[in-house]
Image (cartoon, rainbow, N blue to C red; front, side, top):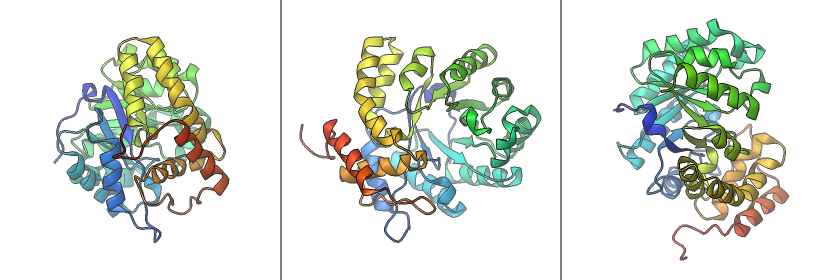
Length: 318
């Protein structure tokens, strides 16, 4: 049973969890438990986000998505805010997925844009608002919006984000516009009309400049690998301590580049799993098809970056 989560509960780091699979392609639940223990339990996080891109949500069945929510709820406890991604191909399907997420124990439904929006739907207020209204009418929990990179064609325009932000139970925007200028436009405009809505920077390769503009937290798949460093960056931002922000960002940078810097971008979360396997957190870094395994030379570069950063296996001494 979900509990009431407000925007203030998201002020901090929200970890978007990756999903380990076994060699047979099935969810590795024991590995997932170890992952949650590694990146969530005792880390001082604001919330957990499951069934997102990091969790390979598009490759999960509806039953698996609900199982991930219920399993995560049991592992992290009733008090940890739990966000769940809603990925669908029609409004009717989105309503069903959101209802299933609520029933499984999610506190917030994070609505992804429809693939159809890549044709300009992100700038169509009527289409976007109809989507949100349909879900809000069908569930009791609040919703958040997953902002895509604007260059994808599915990212919502600033004006549309502002209109969505005014809706009741609109809790947060996962801000991944992919452009620091657009991020600042969105930050200023949304805060002017709906200051209570949380804006969570998630552009993985420029968290520092986003937070320097302004942010209500961090939402990132990198939290699966580097929760402590993200918390350090956030806490420095909350103190308006720019030198400490720069220091934390400098420590994040080499691993960020190893994870996100090399093409293709679709491999980014599998690279995170490579690093987690190297640390002994999970047993396999295999993604689920259609994503391919990581090339051996890229694996080596990721593991070298992890070692150079001094990351330690769970349970290792100081």
